[in-house]
Image (cartoon, rainbow, N blue to C red):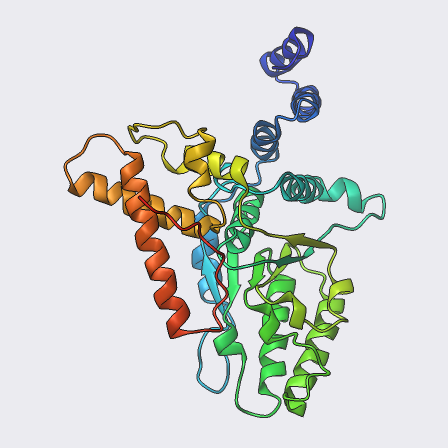
Length: 345
């Protein structure tokens, strides 16, 4: 909590209608909370002060008619989404939380930085196995910045016609450069694969060249986020194009505890969410796998007529998740799956 002296200044400025003094005191409160490692509260106060959150209905309606389409099939090249998740909804490593916090601070104070000739980190690369929070983090960034999330539709961008894929990319970049959005290139490796791969034909190499040039020239009014599950096949020239690279991994025990606390909020339980033994049941799972297990366990509890979620519900759900994963692996041996712990009774 801010000091009494600071609170008196804040309330005095508000009561007197002194907007400049109010903003100055508010910024000091935010800095004070951030110094105490209260990042969630600091970000929330900063967002309120800056008034960056916009009416979703206004920008959704205005953007839907402006999304570029491909000439071959007239399909939209981007999907505009309203972001709902906030920073407290994502469980990440301390390093990634610190980086996200730094990026948000830069964009909340963009005018101040630009006035000193300092440019924002606006091109981010997210790497790591599926289900570990890459897409969710992009949504959180959009939500915290009060911007729409636009997901680039790779299936629409890639064309069978010579030269049309690069043309589609140009339309995408023209749109995201002129419109304040958080643009997510999911499955980014489809557009930026290593050019020395002899299995690829010349057209794909030209696409990579064009994409790298567009990345270099990107000067958008929001954020560009590229996400991949296969960072090892990215072209070596890709990495230096990004201001920040964030590595996403399956949650550790402490992160699993926090995930259980967030996702089981409101459920009566026969166990504590901070029990290391309970969290250990999920060790090795991705965030999305943990959430799927918890949903299955909660449904089992409700349909069984139980009032409390038990460890038995969790173990049954984990066993079913392991069976599901085996079926997925058999159907597609190339699928990347994080390993879940084998549960026996």
